[in-house]
Length: 509
Image (cartoon, rainbow, N blue to C red; front, side, top):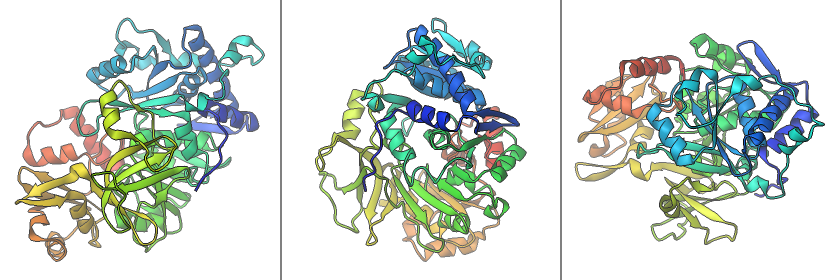
């Protein structure tokens, strides 16, 4: 399915929206609010100052911040200057990672909240973000207008760089274009029905690409963004106030759908969603199960779930495609499992300063003359209903007793038990471990259930009940912490352990 979109940048799309609804509340945070006019004008002032300091089209600017209304001024101000932004959570990113990212990205400048000014290495120019909050710009002045000058190809420029460690532990930057973003967020179903009057939660870390869906998905479509606070009551207050929630399954499983009647639309991504969780949240709500790595721009497949139907990852979003290919890059027939390759408008620009890795994962699309396709590393197949089914990742295949075992397959069987809300399976040393929530799951019954459905070598040797799973700062299940719980090796720091425990109880990150 193709959707015709104007070749506009993210900031051009936002400014059009701001001019149409200037007095509508764009965002709220712990009682403070910001209108579309205020956000548009304050970000214009920042853009003007960035341009004066030599920031231009093609520049990269690091945004070192925490969740706040100022954060929004920073995002749009950088984009209006023609530059792309690199979002980093100042309360989470380590000094080592910060230094690595600043060097690797060749960031020209840092826009920073005052609390993190001391963390910026010497020699880099810094702008204090709070100086631009609620600033106003005379739109008749030439300086301010310079921030809006673009030509007809600007929508193909880099909009942001998300740094993700993936499976290697080494940060790698994914370069995402304006076109990548607007293709998903400015049309159905990626816009999630957001329009003026719709309230959208902002729960996720600024450094996580799903946060882009929350922020830009809301503000490009005229909604009101509700930024949460850090306490558990703050989370609950935000969730009770909103109509649209975008979250990982690990975050969502900490809450009961019945407690939040105002929520009308839920979208999950970032990790596999348990069937039971989808059934709970699709009752009386529109629920999307989505899939896609950062390299394919947040998500590139979406499934609108009907309660009681089996879960899939749906179909490609408009102007994109998914191929199921074998090792020789040949298409596989319906029903055969192979590697998922994404193509079309979702495919990002590549990895920053990693040409060899880009060549490995991004290939010219041999099936359609419109650019590149990307190897997602996911296993999948087309089913008879024309939907995609996800079968885990290639790097989640392990050997147990000489047999190949797909960890996501083991997890799916555990989650099929009626008492299990969420499960995780890990190979630790030479044994399979199954972690399940809630803690009330009857373990002997679960073990018998799994034994009936899996070969003996795929049955976990140990089952661990948990009330809630610990989370990473991106809201995904913290598998490393689960592993250290078992092995006791390389334990996290006391601060990290406390944070993860808090995150497990209320999704604090």
